[in-house]
Length: 299
Image (cartoon, rainbow, N blue to C red; front, side):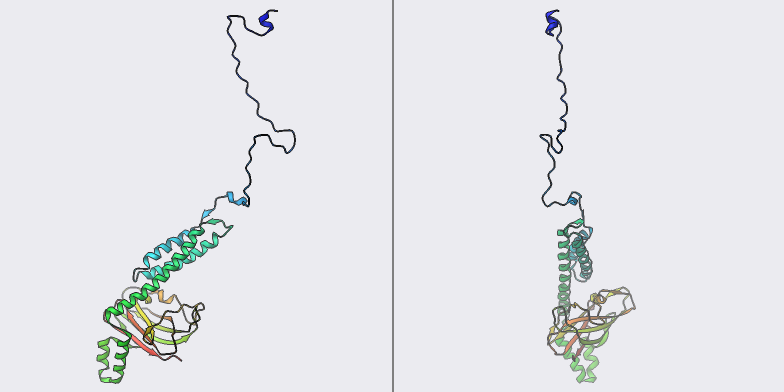
């Protein structure tokens, strides 16, 4: 046998064979049951994790809608007359915000709890600002027209003392007892009687108005008129009830009525004491100074 063949070498000067490295076989699982191959990394469970956490939760549409309505309500709440729309948006947004809070509670299927909380806060602020701005606007209009409760009372008493001058006094002051016209609106103060306590336990008086829309457009009582109650010369705050008294509808003053329609609206006021209550109604856009008023002795 040749030496080259014996040791597997190539003769001198012959071409060399290049050997490529053989691919290594993939590691096999150990024969021992339950044993893991070396250098194997497996995902570790998160302490306190929920198996459903791997499924992405959708953003609560109610929370987003409530937040948008809250922002719009805050913007509109500073604009007189238009802020009545802000109050309605605030109510709708508050309901949506509460729905969002329920849907995004811990373990729920929706996310966005922070948006729901912000929606509730903004909508409540929008409603509060609207009420404050409406009262401020009413006072500003009264100051501009120069009509105060003292002037109205003195004019009414002068009319009662002198029947001959009653018509001229009423025309000069614009005061009308119990019923009259405010521009193209006809308003009547139907009654004023003690009612149930408000949310804070304070006594209240429930005043009922009846009005007719004689304009050519739909009108809302709280927008078209400024209805107020006074005791001892001071304006009374509007009452907020936890349990509505009989015949009381908080939404009536925000409902539109068509031209020629008549509606009854009840408004609650927080009483200061048992002294007489002076009720006054004027037209928001009526610059003539006309006013319907009456003094009630509470029983």
